[in-house]
Image (tube, rainbow, N blue to C red; front, side, top):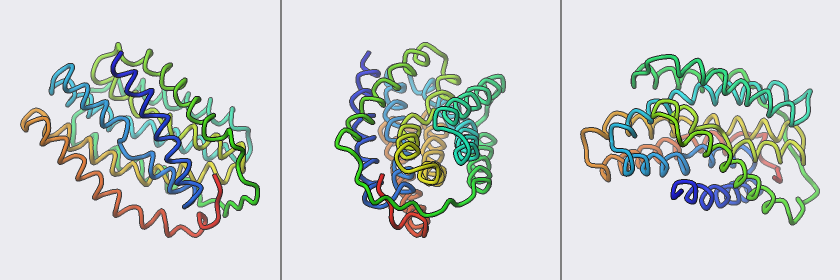
Length: 261
């Protein structure tokens, strides 16, 4: 119950922050922002407190493996977006996510091979998604836009939490990175400004997910040997350092100079 309440409070706030960042700096930056472990990181900490370091460490390996599923999700959505509606894109991408997740759950995951596979999957997905054209929006979004995104996020996280919270550490970890935040951003961008805007969001998130993966590499490697607080502090510092480095590539992308999301 406490975990669900935490998600219901934090997730809509993050959606609002990422939406405002997208209006200021472009959809690539909003995707980069929601790629930070702002939800999964605190959830991992709660797992460690409630269920122990060993549980949270195993879940962290599953979360890293989940980056493979997220990469497939982004690739499927981006490839379908220019030709189909947002609903077709979301349903197809979500189906691909759960199919890949079910396959990964059959495997015995170890930390270093999983980390390498996750990084390669992120790189390959971004390479296979072509850079879309510039998105220019002359019409400002409606006043209800951000509240609608926040309500959608709360409903979405409630459904996913009830499905995932009763599972074991590996499957919980695999399901936890389901791209709720970026799905909402991409769908609203798709509806309001077209497929190119949604693709910018997804490409931005794929760039930011290297920091996400680094965060859980630290958790999975050190949580059972170092104190809880020190492990999560090191993970946060690592993620921020990686994402600060990657931000320059998101901000320098010419296609995100004039955007309103």
